Structure formats: C-alpha cells, structure tokens
Amino acid sequence: MSRIEWPDDPNAFERGIAVLLSRMPLNVERIDGSGGDGGRDAQFTDDSGLHVFEMKSFTGRMDHQRRAQVTRSLARAAALNPSSWTLVVPIDPTPGELEWFKSLRASHPFTLTWRGATWIEARLTEHPQVRKFYFANALAESEQLLRQLVRENGPVADVGDALERMRGMCQRLAELEPHYTFRLSTGPGPDSSVEMQPAYPGAERDRPAGFWIAFADTPEAQATAQEWERAVAFGDPIEVRGEHLDDFQINGPAVLGVPQSWPSAGMTLRVAARTLPADHAAQLVVADAQGRRVAVMGLRMTSLRAGTRGSVLSGTDATGSFQCQLRMDTSTSKLRLELQISIVNRLRPAARLDVIRFAATLLPHHTLRVILGDEPLTDPSPVPVLEGLNPERANAAMELLEQLITIEHLAVTTFELPARMSLEDEDAVRTAFALLTGRTAEVNAVATSVDADDVPEIRQLVADHGIFEVTTTVEDYEVEILGQRIPVGTVSVQTPPVRVTGAVPTQTGWRLSLDTPPGLSGRPFRIIPAGLTAAGEEGSP
Image 1: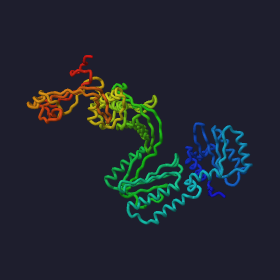
Image 2 (image 1 turned 180 degrees about the horizontal axis):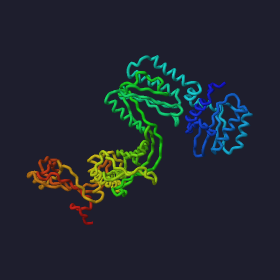
Image 3 (image 1 turned 180 degrees about the vertical axis):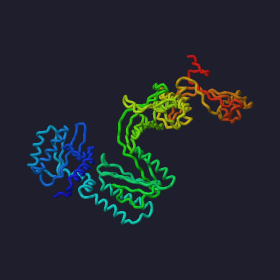
Image 4 (image 1 turned 60 degrees about the vertical axis):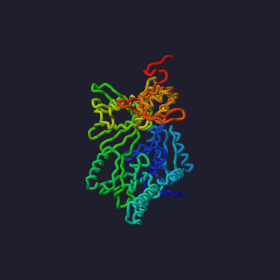
C-alpha cells in the first residue's frame, strides 16, 4: 500500500509534481492553466525540442471518462508539435490500461510516456522535501514544529541564543522546504545574516515569499532607508543592520521559527534581487567631440537583475577590470551607463596595456556609448569620472608595459603583474629593456666600498683621499623583475666619480671606503652592454 498521501485537490497535486520536476535537472517551466493550459501543465525545452508534461490527480483506475480527459489533453498538446508528451498520474497501469495508452502512441509522431505511482514515489524518495511538503502535509507540520521550537526555548536570552535558534531553523527548513534554500552566516563577533534563495527557477511563483520592514527613527537608520529605496528600485544588493530596523515581518517560509525579538543589534538583513544569467557580446565605444571613434573595449554582459522601477544588465571586459552596468529606468524609459575600473591581479602585460590604453581615452571631452551587435543601446553620454585615473601616470604606465612586453619577447619569458608594481620593479624594467635592446642603462645607486689591488696608484688615492671612477666587466649580468632574474649577458659597469675616505688592508690589496664628492651627488651608475663603447656607440668588431 502506498505511503504517499495523494492530495484530493487536483491543483495541489499539480503543484507538487511541478515542484518535483523542477527539483530534477530538467529546468521545467510550469504552465498556469487558468486561461487553458493547451494540454500541458509543465514543459521544458532542450536541443531535441519541446517536452510536455500533463498531470492528472486520478486515483483508482483509468475509467472511460478519465481516458477521454487524457485523450483531449493529448490532442491539445499535439498542436504544439512536441518532441515528447508525458502523463504523470498516481496510477500504475493494468495491462488493459497499458494497451489503451499504446494505441494513443500509434496516432502521434512524438514519444508518449506514462509515469505512474511507482515512478512518482521513487522520485519523491529522491526529493524528500517535496514529499513531506506536498504529499505528507508538511506545510502544517513545518509551521507547528518550528513555532513549537521557539515556544519551548522561551524568550531569547542574547544574540548567541538567537543564532542557535536560527541555525536550527535553517536546518529544519532544509528538511521540510522544497522551494527555497537557506544559509546562515556569522562573524565577526555577533554579526550574522540569513540568506534565502529560490531552489529552482519559478520557486517564487510556487511559494511566494516577501517581507515588510520599518526603519528606526535615527539619522543613520533614515540614511539606510534612502539607500534601501534606491536598491529596491533596481534590485541592487544591500545590507541592513538590525539596529537600523524598528520592525521586520516576513510572510512565507522564512517566517517559520524566527525569534520574536528579531531584529536586534548585530544581525544583518541582506537582500538582493535574483540575478539571471545573460550572455551578450557588446562594445564600449569612446568618441571624440566630432563623434569619431577613439577607442573600443569588448564587453560580455553576463547578468540581469530587476527591481520595482527598472533593471540592470551587468558585464565586464575580458580581464574583469572594467565593470559596466546598464541601468534601465522603466518610469522614464531612459538607459544610464555606469562604469568602474579596478585593475585585477595577475594580468599579462599585454592585457594590462589594453586596459590602461582604453582608460587613457576616458577624457572629459569624450563620450561613451554601448553597442550591442550593430545597435546602439545608449546615446553618447559624458565620460564618468573614474577614481585613481591620472592621464600622465597612464602614459608612463603604457610606456613601461610596452617595454615589459619587449622583455618577455627577448628574454623568452612571461610575467603576471600585481595590481600595482613597486618603484624598484619599474626601475628594473627600464634597465632590462635598455640593456636587452643594446643601449646603456643608468641606475641610481651609491658606492660605499670597493676592493682594489695593492699598487702605487691605489696607495696614492688612499693617501690623498683622491677622486676616481671604476669600470668593471660583469659576465652573465642579470636584472631582477617581479622575482624573476632576467639574463642580459656581459656588461661593463661604470661608477660615477667617488672619493676614497679610508682603507683597510686585505690579503690581496685594499678594501676602500667610498663616498660621493661634494657637488657630484645624483650621478648614476652606467651599465653598458657588450659591444658598446662608454659613449654608447657600437665598438669595433
């Protein structure tokens, strides 16, 4: 005997089966039959075409009248040219009923399937939340048990007590609630939040949920209230701290078991519209005052969310450094472009160069527009002010990146850049680029000591505290960039003028102490690649 309590209400049976199909990996869409369902209660589409489900809450046997109802539904569905049509009914067919159903298959070119009580029970075993909620009166059970949980535990003693109850609520709801998923996050300290997300597309329609809030009468709370209105208008994510709320009421599954003392300080209400996936290739175009294109950046618009007054289509460039939002205000039918830049870590030099080169064109006298395919989505709009974007710094960065790309090619290596390079690494790039391209590099450094042979000229320098320059040949010279040692070959290192200030005997000669003579400070070391003269000209072969 079946352990399933089949609902007497046909609508309840249809809702339960529709939710069951939705929880299966089918991406099922339920059809509202109030205006005629066209022979289908649910459907989904894949590469093979349209797949239709017809739910019948019949129990007992499939008599003549019920067979006629199924036949009429099948005839209406056939007009849709589906790839398959599935009857879901809590009846396992007898041989005679199966023969009748096979006769229907003969007159239709698409696949017909009968899913009976055994199949339904097996699927409900795989999805116990649906079975408990729709086929074991779990709605009443969940309300009773969770409200009892609050009553038995008595008043909330502190935030920790509230959190424990909320954890219990989330766990119990996960067992009983098939339409939504719940997540409780805590920390740091007493801070916590509960998130409720639809478990499948269309869950909000099958089990509507909502809430009502009132903000406290404080300047901070009223400022949050204004942010809340703006966020709700377009579905933007927002967090509201419990101390800013005066009242909070929920209708729907989240009301079950919520402590009556909520909201309280330390708890957070986090709300965001459900984000739908999108996949649109677009272009962000910069134009000058005459309307001529100056630069273009490819975009991939990947998400869409909606609020009470409009919607937001969001995307990024290939690197993720440019975040673009198209905000449509349905009350004014205007589309506003919002752009932010935040250069991400671990970009290759060429990718970062593309980002900065485009950013350098975002000047006050230029305009921006978004093009989707061949159609402009926005009118030309003024370039927004982007924080941290300095045109002079951008030009220097582009020159440095071009040098780094050349180093990658000549040294046969690759770099992944941090969001910001150190000054030492920037100097190293300039040095390596000069040497690898056959030019003299100048490096700011200070000479403090040098080893010298015990010869008369050195003794005279020690005695007179004399001034001299040193040129040394270094084989296999390397420059370190971002932790990589880049080989540049044999070089001559030429010091600026230095003065001897002291000397200590060594086994082979002298260790001379040096400083910079007065009036000669600021002169760089010169590093000369092999094959160049000290004047920077090519030497004789």
